[in-house]
Image 1 (cartoon, helix red, strand yellow):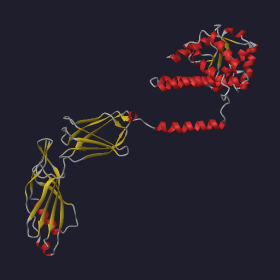
Image 2 (image 1 turned 180 degrees about the vertical axis):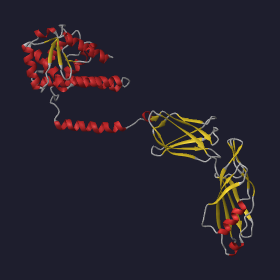
Image 3 (image 1 turned 120 degrees about the vertical axis):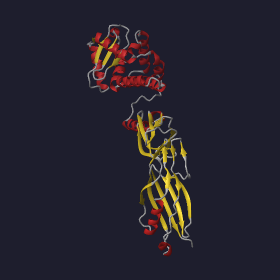
Image 4 (image 1 turned 60 degrees about the vertical axis):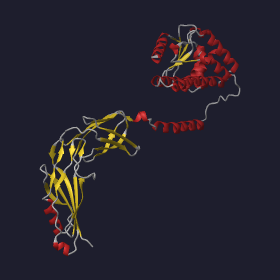
Length: 428
């Protein structure tokens, strides 16, 4: 608001000011404009107040506003004031100062931005002072004229804050010390020095620009629900979000309604896993999270398959190794109050075929089946085709007579996959 008010004030003052066509001012302005290589026209205006601050503003059509008392100034003061203000125009200081004010408006909360904007204004004044002194003006003469201007100024107030004035009282002491110091190097930067400075600045700012603070790289929210195949909510399921590139692993659990949520995850690509005893592991390999966005994933967990394995030795004895879920836990298992795993109720022992026994043939028959809702193995299918046919026939005949207590989901029987391994072994 201060910047807008200042610009409006400048426009209002400029509109009420009248052009200054006095020969002395015009001739001096043209001479100094050529010396500082200003090609665009510079307008001289005279405002109505006799003690206003000399200042400049504008980019394409720059203006130099002088007080009405400037017609009585001596030649030396005219040259000093115009040299200083035209140096601002040649350097493009007003445009840079407006950019600094805009940066300060956007980053008003950052104290370093306020310090940088103020330092930019001070350094631009010092640079223009050097330009005046390099034009042939003696330092003591420049200091005296600047001090007299500061004494006579009555309206250097904040309404002019968007303009570049020659004699702001806030930094006069520092400027006097610099202009009266004979050891100060007042020459401009060489082309080599300018290029090195620009390159150094670029090398410094480029790595800083690509850095992202954790707070800048946060996804707004990632949420979803966990349900089983019947559509019922699955509570206490574990949800794992893994980002291997950023080495980030976050975990949470679903609530009683099956809902879960991550409030702040760094943006990136994740692998999502949902785990629950009695269910198959759910995996989503690519879940993209954008900075500041929201994403969701609804998951349906399938019932875990059952696995049985038995050994058939040559004497006909059978040694069951285990009958359990893929997790390796035996027998009947109650999981989360929702899933009751299948349990084998009877075991018909496969017979070692005499022909295979005589031939010394042994091996493993892998069968896939579906345990129906009545506990009967359905759709028996041989998974390995390289097994002896006699061993396969014996295994299928025995397994088809097995009976299970079916898997219960929320108290209701459901069909579930099972893998059965029958190992035929000969004693040495």
